[in-house]
Picture (cartoon, rainbow, N blue to C red):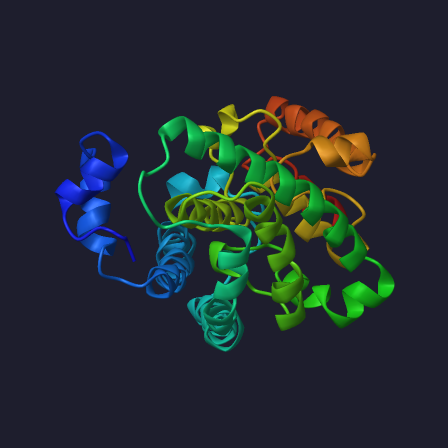
Length: 304
């Protein structure tokens, strides 16, 4: 709740007129408690989990031919019943684990110093903090993900997430309840190290989940704006990790590729990619290739 009764009081406290965005924030948040504002995180997560995957899920179910060339595993298709089961399971975990976790985590948000008042952060401040959050989360998530691929971690917890060897957007948050709790730690570390405004925190939570949905989408579009982000992994990079499955010791990073490169956990992926890029070129030369950056060739070889 803001400590100002009117816009004039807020302007006097800041020593300047409020920006348009700050005026909107004042009108919306002035009489709402900080706890109530923080609980909006649940609404944002519900919207992201439910709405963001829909376009590509529609493409998947409609079998739109023009998009087949961009599907990473073109032979792997889910039925509408399987897609709905995935979403239903995600929503069950959302209401039983994610939602309650958000409701009870407010004291930690206050403790680290996430603020709700004025002024709002500048665009550069938001960008810098989001960059820190992504870097911190990516590094810490890398090591936790590697741990979850040891024998105990995989069999007891992480195997649930790997039930989808050809993932879809709805499968991004599909996981064991313990994994949801564990991977909440890397997401919280960045804001704990560099606390900012609640608006920045909302953007962080939304963007991180949108990124996870994109990397689990099962489609690799050459026009995706994420192609221009340095060291960004993307759908094709993470899809390989799911395709290999429980035996995978490659491509652990959640967002970027530098950890896998530094610690040598992308060698199998890079070798396979070179091998199948060569095979793809040979198939194109023979007029036989019909899509998929590497998985179609892998499946064809497995079937032989």
